[in-house]
Image (cartoon, rainbow, N blue to C red):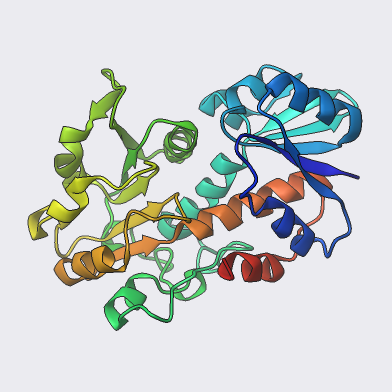
Amino acid sequence: MKFGLIGHPIEHSLSPALFKAGYDGMYPYDLIITEDFEEAYKRFLEGYDGINVTAPFKELALRKADIISEECRLVGATNLLIKTPEGIAAYNSDFRGLKILLQNFLECIPNANRAPSGAVSFASARLSKKVEAAMTPVEQRETACPSGLSRSDWGLNNRPRTLVLGAGGAGKAAKAASEALGYETTVINRTQYNPEIKPLSAFREELRKADIVIYNLPVRIPEIDMLTEADLCPGKEKVILEANYRNPSFDNGSIQRMVTMNPLIRYIDGREWLLQQAVTGYELFTGMAPDCEAMKAIIKSK
């Protein structure tokens, strides 16, 4: 079997290293470098069993699929195509990975104290004690209501409220995953907005209502530095998950300041979402679970 990645630009991608680590080099994994989607897709058909798809090809790739998974219908995009006897199948591991993380942190289910395969934390040794507390490993967190307790006993709304920042590919996956879990979901975007997407001016008001914040914007917004104690609602559990793991908008200083104002805030590093979506995607490729610890080591080294 042979796999690869299409998109532009992709030279910086960790996918080849992650895939190699996950399967100890058992399968080839290439970067298919071209700005032309049709050329990239042709190369997939000619020489690969499956491909990951990243921007700006996610919507285009979905149009090529013969078999469209439910999550792709919800998101309107795919990041994973696989050849099957029935045709080209499309999946969205962004959706699947995030859904697992949200369930693990917030769902009251009997076995939820067991973290999903590959769910990890990448708290830096340079962080202060308060910041480390906000980024404790998934395996050690109180990730679900203990048996016999209600969601309100754990400090969450009966129907959690999710605030999604960004309406691009990752934002659409975040919205779809949140809604699939039955969470009340609000989307805010910097530029294009409509009756279903609120402008950035609504950020602080919506933050106060939210239990979960999923930050998908490619840049840091000034509003992060303007947050007050009232915005962060001391005494209320909040989870902040950031998609951007290379240049996070919530730096150590921001996390420190937020945790000082509300010690119940939990920050989820973007590398956790990266790892979880990679694990779920690679399992779809091969039918076998990859070595999560080896993949974690690759991500942690970057």
